[in-house]
Length: 263
Image 1: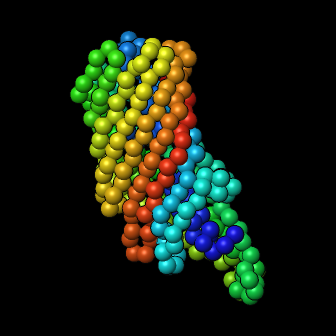
Image 2: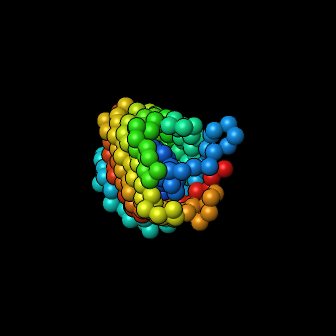
Image 3: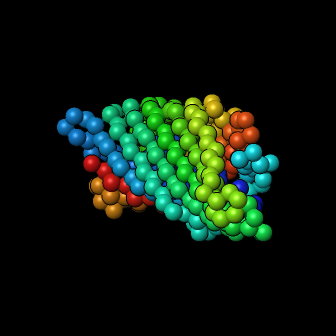
């Protein structure tokens, strides 16, 4: 692993597809049609695990190192993935909705040093959590489609640790981390082509701790039954964060796949 890849690994976890598939950052795109089965109380619920085969490109910096340009494919990222979990949830009552999205990834990589004096090898471990909580309101709805206006807050937490083995620095480690919150607003929509097939998409933009945070996607879904459906599409997410030498200015994009369970 080159030093460039070590720097890239520090940030790959933050946006890994991790981030997987449907952006609950705005709302689940998995609702197969506007007509919904409601509970006796009038609420509808859904839970959707997802997968996002995304690559990563942009500029990163950490541990006091100068900025490095990263251009990693999903296969490059997947080779160093230790664990990843992503899921979304939504509760809806009439035109109102509450939704959440959580993404967690842990990646690691190890490389030897040229001379082995300070250390014989160096290991990098990076953990990233991104969670969004938002609300929405349907500004248009008929028997075929719905358009929601949405807003929410997304929390980012990125922590990386360098561990040294052998040599003078044997047993020592160094940690660098950042936590920030961005406010996001935008639209999401769903349109039914047939009772089984539907289109969905969304767009969010905002800022806060980051100078810019945006998320767009388009997908097609298929309803297998009243409770189970699947979606496939394409998503792009970008964030531009920098503070005291910690730089995270990246774009992540790639195909998405998801499974939705309604109850």
